[in-house]
Length: 110
Image (cartoon, rainbow, N blue to C red):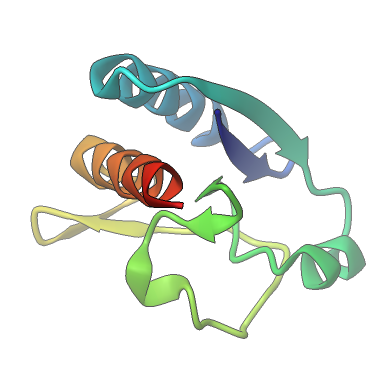
């Protein structure tokens, strides 16, 4: 079973829509997954967790955005994603599905 985390800070307007997108992506992918909401409470905790901003989605500990996986600029702030050439506060549904399916494939290979 995959473990998906949605990391966010309180008051983030994009955390609830992202959680809904994650749930939809899991259903569409047809994989078993446990979805956990992780509230990041401080800048210190953001550093400890490697938090790239709210919302951040990880599948089995791996960021859904491949280009962000090597990032080291952690902090307590908002995060944006690129969707069809424009910046948005939620990860694109296709990105979520792809990350979930990729990780599910890797788990089956082990």
